[in-house]
Image (cartoon, rainbow, N blue to C red):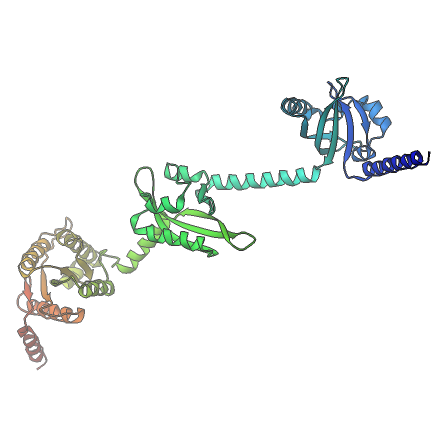
Length: 448
């Protein structure tokens, strides 16, 4: 008898423990039949606390039918999901809303299991958690992501993510919109360096940013050109930020690819404006000198010719017809020069009516032929509204015979030009050392 009393005490203790468990766990427990309306068999105290109803409320308002407690807009979806899940297994996981007594709605995560008794009775044992706050947070996150997606879709920038372990890339939709094809997504470390869609001149810069990012450099940026589906390259700027795991190992990079074609063009236009004479579009004097010195320092530049071209009696044009006519004259001369000289030649305006042309690789004979063409070209310039007859004088010096640096060549071409200007104009002359003596003699005569 003593043994039975101890066993009964143990059972009573376990029942008290189970009752305490069901009362204090932060979830609702209920048992119901697997019928059309989920007839309630039993409920825990925490079930009532979760929704604010008493046992009588549930009996009077819902007739002990759990299905009637489910928010009506969710009811059909709940039963459809139950049917689908129970067709494959006896476990359920559902999310739905239940109206509470004070008029609000709570989101429920319902995890249940179907048990079938010996008599064939199908019973559901369910645990319910209030996930209202989690759903609010999830919805806020969804809306935030949606807003960001809208912003990304409305813009033209391309967002990307590089999973270094998987060696894979993902891009926002703007990639295909921008370039008209699907980007490389797998095995990028080996495939991108072989891609024809990155300009060959920019591949080293692109590989460098990949290498730096993979090595853990926190932030990298570079500019490169990407080919679109029509074969046209577009200038882009890529910015990449590295992300790390708990061991501070680089595992991911996120970033953006921005179209900078317009920026590049504007930058180039500013460079041209800074380099060029605003009236003629030719290089200004400082840039002409710099470009010419670059040629002279180039080891493969074995010969070349420097032309200094001066418009004869240009002051008369300005005085007789006005400065607007003078500007138009200089502009026409510059256009003629662009047509006569090669695109590799350095053409500049170095004074009011004085022009420079440096022609790398030009022989003496070709220089003479070109000088004749320039003289003829100047004479052929005409104006509908003005009766002007133009001519010019040209002084020529050769590299390396007449000088190996800019100043020597310029000085000697200038002496040749001086000689022409003082011996009849409208012609050209090639520098020789006697011209220096001629200039000194003429200057002494002028001042005597």
